[in-house]
Amino acid sequence: MNLLKKKIPLSYTLVFALACSAVSFFILQKSSLSHASANEVVDSVTPTNVSCNYTVARLKGYKYIKPLLNNAPECEAKSLESVKQEISTLIENEKQSGIITSASVYLKELSSDDWTAVNPGEGYLPGSLFKLPVMLTILRMAETDPALLNKKILYTTQSVVNVKQTYETKSIQSGQSYTVKELLTYMIAYSDNNATQLLNGIMKPEILIKVFSDLGLTPPKPNAADYLTYTISTHDYSIFMEALYNASYLTIPASEFATSLLAQCNFKDGLVKGLPDNVKIAHKFGEAGSQQLHQLHETGIVYLNNTAYLITVMTKGTDLQKLTQTISEISKITYARMNKNA
Image (cartoon, rainbow, N blue to C red; front, side):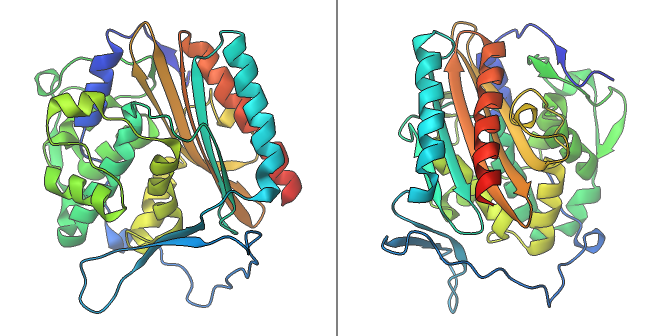
C-alpha cells in the first residue's frame, strides 16, 4: 500500500480551516492502557546550563497543589551550539537558493532540558498540527466521561465537507460506524480529515481553550475567522509534545496512549526520512497556507538510546516537495549530532 497518495489540494486555506475545526481527537479508555512500573529507575542528570535561570510552569486552579507542567533554562544550551549553527546554515542556504521562504526549528534534549532554537520568533499556521491540542482536549473530556471512547458515530458523505489535502493515506468509509477511539486513530495516524470532522461534533470548545490556557499558550478565539489566521511558533507548539512526554498534563496512561498513536503516524517524507530505519519516533505533520505559499510542518519525539529529543520544524515556500526535503535534511543533521552527544 502506498503510504502517500498525492492529490492536488483544492484549497490550502480550506484544509487549514478543516484541520482547525476538526476538533476531536483521541479518547482514552483507562482500563485498556498499561501503567508504568512504580519502581522504575529515573535518570539522574546534571544540567549543562547550571548558570542559567530556570522557568517553571505549574498548573493552576487547585487548592492544595500546583502540578508541574514543564521547566527549562531560560538560555540556550552551549552543548547544542554546533547543531544550531549547522541547521542555521542549511536554512540560510536554502533561502538564498529559493528552495524555501523561511523555516524555524525548536530542539530540546528531554533528559537534560537543554534546548536551542532557530528563527524562534516567526509564527506559522498550524494546519493539521492543530489536531494534537484537539487530542489533548478529548482526553481531558474522557477523564470525566470514560464511555466517550466507545461511542459510535455513523459516517456519511453528507456528514462532512469534501476537502482534499496533498498527503492522504487511509480514510474512513461512508456508511460505516466508527467508535471515537477508531476515529481518533484515523485522525492522528493517517491525518484523516473526514474522521476529524466527525469528531468535531463531540468536542467542547471551552475545554480546548482551557487546554491552551493551562499550558500557558494564547488560545485561538472561538470563531472561524480567528482559526484561519491563528499562528503559533515552534517553541510554543512544542509545549504540547513535551506535556505528553512528561505526562505532566494528562494522566500517565492517557499520555502513553496518545503518544503511541503519534508513533503510528505514517507520514514518511519529513523527519522520518532523515532518520535510520530502526529509530523510533512519535510525530505529527501539518500542511497549511495557499497554492502560492505553502506551509509544511512536523513535530516529533525521537527516541535515542535511553533518552529522547524533541524537534519541531516549521517551513514556508512555493514548492511543497522541497519543503519535505528541507525537513528531512534538518532531521538528518539533528540526529547525527544528537546521536553523537548521546
